[in-house]
Every structure is written in structure tokens, then in C-alpha cells.
Length: 294
Image 1: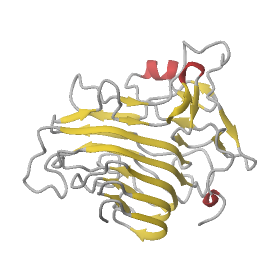
Image 2 (image 1 turned 45 degrees about the horizontal axis):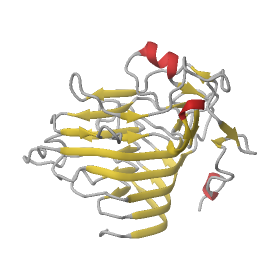
Image 3 (image 1 turned 90 degrees about the horizontal axis):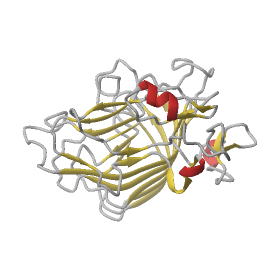
């Protein structure tokens, strides 16, 4: 699609990449997906070929996803994911200023383990540059490739992922955000209050308890500051392959030792809907397809 394109109420069934954003000012709303094992449900940048500035994907209902943790593309050792870039790093504009919001994957099975339902999620997020990777040919990555202000919010993945999310770069050329702007943020920063551990519209995984993106590499730091719906005490769930001493500059919900007395337990302010599913308390209703397909 060209710059400024708009599409809504689509229904797509594919094993390859499903929603591919590769143009400026693109808006995609209310997409129902059936996702096979090879591709990503959302590919940002079309393997690094396209600009995605000011593009928005809002309302994604993935009724079926079949990602195998042992798969070479989307498994624990691959560069794919539910949301991925698989970027070759050729486009000097990089991956900048795009939002994915209101995405939902139902469990379709018993809660509690990664392999308990009909839907299978391996890697939730795979963001970065794989120079000379799949579809890249022999052209090296651009000397500077910015990844900045990728916003992921109100994303609920009920099947427990088999693998960690991946942040990667084998080119050494990625500029991970700036001093003022993260490369990626996994909640609604504008409406959150970090001082009171009130994180609105976070990315959420699994159930009973649900847990959130935890970008610490150190397990002790994660246990002190990362969050679940039961409180502080998460585990690292992001894997980095970006070289020693490089800061990926991502933002994710943290609380812990500095929790103010108004939130002594460190439990983020997330309320339950009448059906019992967890939604941010700012959202009186999420989207119709949470209860039925659009």
C-alpha cells in the first residue's frame, strides 16, 4: 500500500507475514487474522524496505496463531515473532514513530502452560536488524539505522509464550532511540503514572497471573522491579543480541523498591472487566472482537 493508505475490517488467513506496514502515514484498523507458522502477524517495515513513520495498526484480533518454538523463522532461535521487523537495515529512515495497539490473542485452551491451548505463541516481539539475513541479498545494512518510538500498547497475549522477545542487531549500526525517546515502549506512557506504578494499557502475557514485558537481563533486578498482576516479582522475558555494552533503550513497566506508600504492594492499576479479563481501567470497553469476531 502507498503512503497515507487506510484499510479496515479485513479478514486474512496466511502462513506468511500477515499485516505488513511499509509506507508512511498508513492506518490499519480492525484486522482479524488467522496466522500460520512461517510469518509474523505484523511485520513493521517489510524487512527494512519501507518507511513506517506515523503509521498505526489498531485493533488486531488473532483468532488462530500456530508459531512453533522449534521453527527456524518464528521459533526461539529465529528473528520473527507475533510482531517483528526482520529488517535488513537498508532503509536509512529506519523504523520510527509507529504504533500497534489493541491486539488480542485468545488462549483457546486450559490456562497455565505454554502448550495448553490451540493457539501457540513462540516469540512475542522480534525487533532489530539482521544484516544479510533472509531476503536481504548481498547489500549490507545502512551505516545508521534508527529504531525509535515504536509504541506497543493494550496488547494482550493470553497463550503463554514459549520464548522470550528478541532485540537484535548484527550490523552494529542500529541507533536505539535517543536520550529523550526510547526505541520501543510497551505501555501507554502518556496516561501512565510511573510514580504510583499506574501503567495504562501495557503489553500483557498469559493469565492467573498475567505478566508484563520485563527487559532486565539480570534476574535479581527483574524480581525486584518487574511486574505481574499479582505484584512485583517478574522474570526477564527479553533476550538481547546487540553486542556488549549496547543499550537497547526500551521502556517497560517497573515498580519495586521505590513504590510509594499509596501502592505498597506494587500492583499496577489494572481493573477487571465484567467477564473477568484484565483490561486497563481507562478502557471501559476494549473492542468488540474481544467478545466476538468483527
